[in-house]
Image (cartoon, rainbow over all chains, first blue to last red; front, side, top):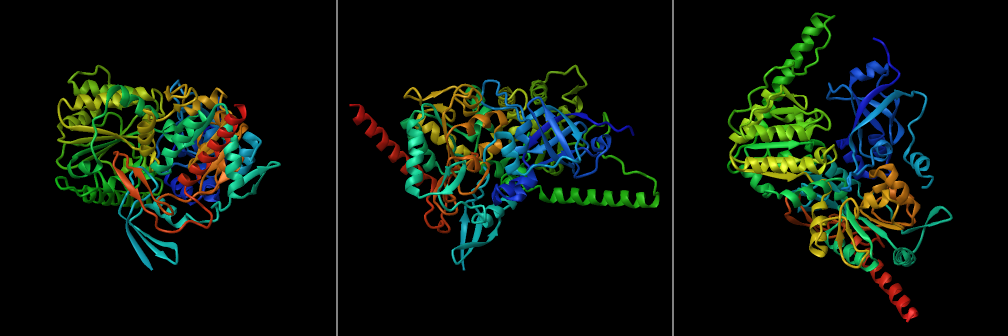
Length: 135
Length: 485
């Protein structure tokens, strides 16, 4: 199969039980950071990108780009859809547009995904420093 | 060892009130009946991420400070601000929210709760269309059709299906748990046969088990309780359902309107709506009309996708249409354990459920203008107080940029992304574990939260901290007016 270096996908963000459990344990915990700095992908899409599980990928949208770890979605097939749990990593790339009602668009955002095996996934402090130069 | 029964769980909007805690020398050592999140909270509340002393930022570093100093600093920031925002409130008690509203009025700020990024659009739609609702108890005893739309209760409200809907044993409706087990066993058996076949014919690749195009869905017209899940992805909840409809992202509105047409006996002259064959929709529409008590639960899958409040308008209208034919109710799946309470208290005190602006001296409400997200995106606020919430981790980057530029006060039991960026941090007691209070379940039933253990020394409840800040703010303002006079 021809490998592509980039894939155009739809980004969804939302809850996962791992994130729910980790956030109750403590949001400064490494479990929390690990549960939200990932991106669930369709195995077929991963094949197209030529990546294996736990490879770092860069997700870019009109609003920013962030490096997260790619994980195989347990509930495929859903080609062209990637899923990042709510958290500081997802928020770098979501659409802030509220359409005049206060609610940003957290779901269904057009995004690009490309493998970046040599770029590390930042930890929470690193991410906050990079995004906001504070903390 | 002491066992405390009937504890209300302060995690999600389901507010399960049957938790049993075992307490040994002032610490919770065992949790019974809770879900994974509940256990995590009750066992991890005093973990290493707990803040135990007030913190103040000095020369770019957060350093320990006395309570008096921290209160003084916070009050000074709030009293001097022209347009402060007060955000959070969904993970604390109604009593704390009430003090928060008093504080917002005193300093002329914008007070908003986390509903703005979860079910804010639902509230706007309810104001326009209205909502047929009931308690979760009624659903448990009577509902024979349960639909979850854009919501994954297995991940976000783990005991919702078991306690209140399809898998609960009601007075008039039986639990579907057995049916699910039979289905699961059959599925495991099928998978075993498939893997044996694969082993025998080594080259055979595993087949993808998606429903083939045009195949008519398994009948859902059987008797008994039924569970339908409609979502953009196959969640764990979808696997538990009798029937799952996978809608294309951002196309919920179309699907809702298609259901409305079908329920009014109109024909659709297309083959597919939002990626779903019309014959499947017809079958689900028949099940909706044919049930005797239906319940539609919707999650943030509807409020955050394209259409936002209009999706909810359509869902509410669908249920209104259904009530011409049968009995149907609709309920938002509220996330935080007291987000419903925050909306309720805000409505009592100011007339509006969220996004209330006191800057002109009287409450104004116009989501899109007075909602925290828009205030931040327009870069208008000049200080912020965050209570029991983590906007730095949950707001889009552009909004956070402005939030962290200005003085930021955080009241939270745990260290989180927002506390790391704050200028003043107050440690607080966990309401429902170390402090008493009231919380509202997603069906607007108020439940008491218990105090089961003592908070760490010198750590107060959110309510107490807010009262102290409020009284200090009043002192500063009084001194100013006498000075001016």
